[in-house]
Image (cartoon, rainbow, N blue to C red; front, side, top):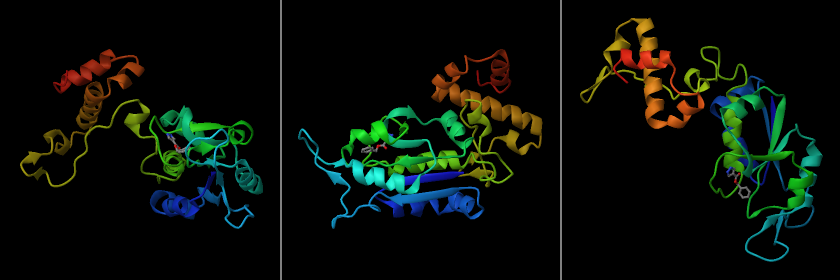
Length: 240
Ligand code: JF5
């Protein structure tokens, strides 16, 4: 899968995507992440990418010319998304859709925003990671790349799929424990040390359900409420 990123900070994007999971996936040839400098096609001495807004007002706006030129010099994989709080918000379903495709591209805005002609005539849509204000699209682009990249077959290795069992079911994760069995007086639940794998699986499911009911009732609602099987699972461990 190829993912192209257009940014005034290509080294920041490369610094993140060349490490850890995404770096290894690129070494293996599973991902091809290319960061492009929005200044690459600029010809003026200052390599300008921004200018003051027509109509007045605070701050600067990314100019159309350098952005069109940078994108057209590359002919990147489409769809090309502008990072920003408008447009569809990333969720696990959207990440799955992007991971099932051949690739896509992300344009990172800065300052007060980008010239509207970029929105109208260059990009295919806008992509949000949530309702908050960032200083630029780079961190948002990295969130998208990590969420999608880990779902590409082979990236997570073969012990687990990237589509985490409980989240893909619309539930929070069950609690995890490792050694020591007792830490500062807090013990690991006996069931996890019992060796009864069927019971452990039922306990984990009940814990995932109970946590979701308590912390994210909206996710339970989205699944259509608790089923009779869910209620029985909770009752077995006195979580109802
Ligand atoms: C931004 C001008 C974009 O990329 C984002 C964002 C994505 N989801 N939520 C926020 O904002 C960055 C800053 C300035 C355009």
